[in-house]
Length: 236
Image (cartoon, rainbow, N blue to C red; front, side, top):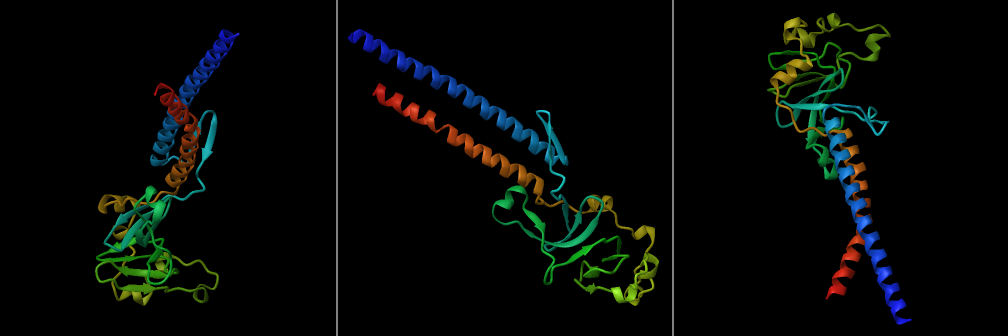
């Protein structure tokens, strides 16, 4: 009778040991798959992909904005996005957002520069052919800023053209011309100004999503640590 009990205890321990070994193998495989998937998705996002296909399904990240900052000085940068070029103030990212890039454009408030649609650079002046925003002209060396030059009351619903901007006195007295040789393009910006480590919202989403997965995997590993502790206790 006692032998039967002993056999039962041994059989029970063997079953637990087999389960523990299988669980550990599956657990390690899960870590491997998740790490590979994380590296794959992060690499795809950093390469500029907005839609990533994995295991037969697509992950769409196109709703999250991506832009690149190119440093002019300690406060100003050109922002190159998908089909646009802007002059902006920039700042360091805060908290966990720094995991996805060190710098971001500053909010459009106060003394911060936010000048979308910049398309010309002559001497030290950056200017727009559509001076209807918060800032129309900026001198990169002196810091001179000229605000909105054309308002809704001037437009009267008519389409404002670049040739009209050339007639404004603020442009004429600074000899700011709208000629092809002064045209500013994303390609010229990339070739002239150093890129900053720019915050990437898609990278942040991927990092946070996998951060949650990694946390769940760590929780799933708790039984293995308990099991290992019991085995060490039995050996002692």
